Image (cartoon, rainbow, N blue to C red; front, top):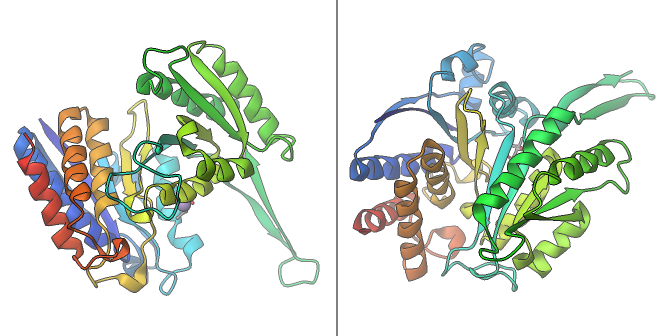
Length: 362
Ligand code: IPM
Ligand code: MN
């Protein structure tokens, strides 16, 4: 089997963590006997300074033939304003209809978290974030800019199709996960909403949620307002199984979720096109942290986890599980720690240790 993987290391620490992700991908592909054909692209803020745009106009055509995309991180506000640089990311998410942003929240043994309630036992949930519309629809405008009456409008768009497909994905996922194996119901999908205040968009979202839920009598339904979820995530993380959220709400609660996982260095995500009409894209969800660029201090775990998610998506489940086991082993030993974990190991030393740990797995 040969997989065509497009790699966009991007900005800041993106290049460093992507190098480690590729290291793991090489090791695991050799172990399992599949081949990786990689093509790397230098798109990002430096590219923009040189060419006046973040990437070539035909970026979607260039990427379309890949089986999956590995993204480091995008953005360096000292070079290009964020709302411009991030169009690169949003263009791929929308252009390839990656309507599910899958963000597992798991705490590895041995990892410290600032949240007292978080233990490897209590933290095991997945946020399914809508990834192509909602508050990120990009519809709006400026009005009378430069005048005292200046104004800005930003319109959120919630379509029947857009809500339905992501909510359905969440229910299917709950069925697959079977968090309450052997019990009825077998899983739960929490609807993250704000229909008490957003009287059109979120009322509509709730309506679609209830419609979809009817096809899943084996899955428990649940509703929590987004503000309350931030509280419950901290108070009782073990309560959650699958949480389905709109684009903006999902973005916000997964940053909080990363703290349950021990920090941003452990949070990975997949931008998934479930129908596989287009390639899906996998990325650590932390930012590019330009001030740490080139210092070798970034934590590569999230980038390595995103490779794990990619292998799952490609159907290489055994290889993916191996990465998880290797990570669990090395992290629970507690010897190798990057700066964010209170240690001194460099990004590449950490990557090497994880690689060795994975190769040693039987
Ligand atoms: C994320 C990021 C992006 C988002 C930004 C960089 C546009 O925060 O992937 O979580 O808001 O989706
Ligand atoms: Mn975010």
